[in-house]
Image 1 (cartoon, rainbow, N blue to C red):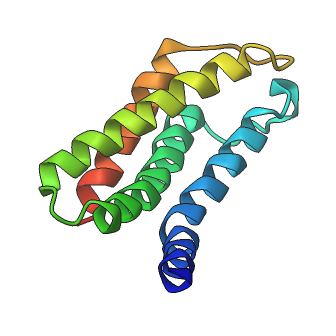
Image 2 (image 1 turned 180 degrees about the vertical axis):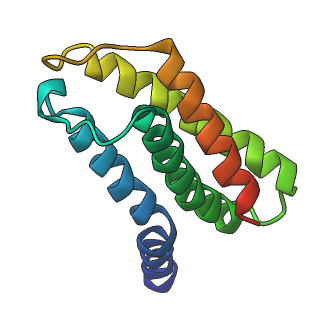
Length: 123
């Protein structure tokens, strides 16, 4: 039995821990007051949200592919998009309490688009 537990710990570290660490990074970035974020170019918010959640989707999709190997590609995309959308909603709720930040339905939509694209890319 010790071998099975060891294998599950290795599995978790290899596949799920990167996604969890990335979610913590997103949380940390979302915790920064809005007046401390640089304005680099027009539309940066949209681009950054798509990239941020596209990368997150790669980690989630990778973990799901190895956790649910018998599930179809489309079901994994569906599960990934649901997980990412729920996280995006909770992230926006969190941002509502951060100085100079607010919660935005538009950001959740853009996050979901980024998550969908990232999920499609990972096969």
